[in-house]
Image (cartoon, rainbow, N blue to C red; front, side, top):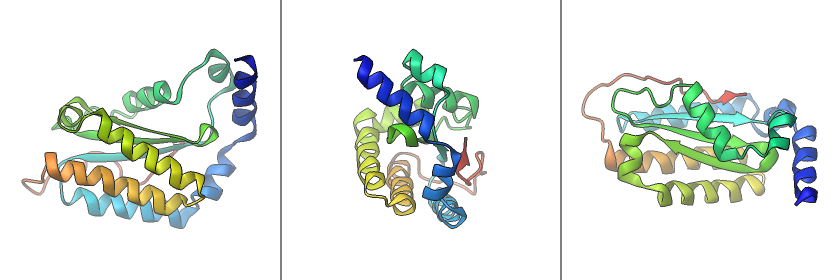
Length: 168
């Protein structure tokens, strides 16, 4: 156990924002942004993509999981605060090569944890293969399909969350 903790600590020490920018250069961020914008025209949900290089070392040492961090980001960015309770966070923690999806209660109750988990694992495989932009776009579209099925767009609606991926 201590060995795995030290390996994780080392990964978080090594991975910085430059890694995120190499994986997601401006053109890739624009592709993801465009995918979110196009997808949100088909449903009332709100998708937020967050890319984080690594956690502060103290949090790694204390054992903060990617899931715990995703929940923290979900709250801090107010993804939960959408009109129809259908905000969805796609969170990538690069140092752990982990993807987490956190969905607001309104949409999570309809889709379920298994569907979100399947999308996360598929995205993790794509990222492991080095296909960052394509995988992120595919993940946005997969989330979007669930939103289309369970939260179809009834009117013009408003864009409550920024479409541009956020790099922390």
